[in-house]
Image (cartoon, rainbow, N blue to C red; front, side, top):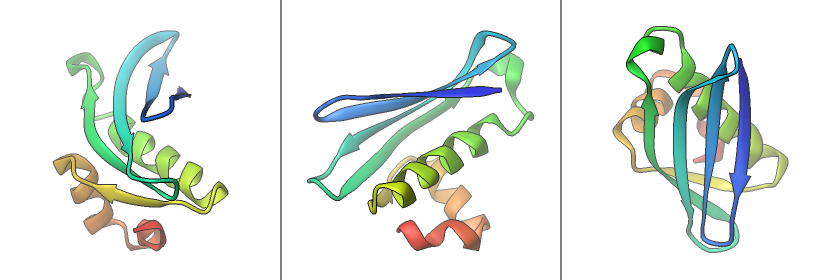
Length: 92
């Protein structure tokens, strides 16, 4: 699996590709210069159960850590992922 990031002035996205095909998407919005809000995560039905959603959240965490940013998880999936995985809560 490969995850690509597209970052714009006010919004951005992480797109997951599985065997060259888009499998999932997570969108975010900037909340100032030091925080971003994960507002939507979706995985195409054909790729459910493969951990793609979790990988998208972890990629956002990696991006936040590398750039000294904080994450506000408004999307229910991202919120649940942070609740289940204590090791990524440092970016909250």
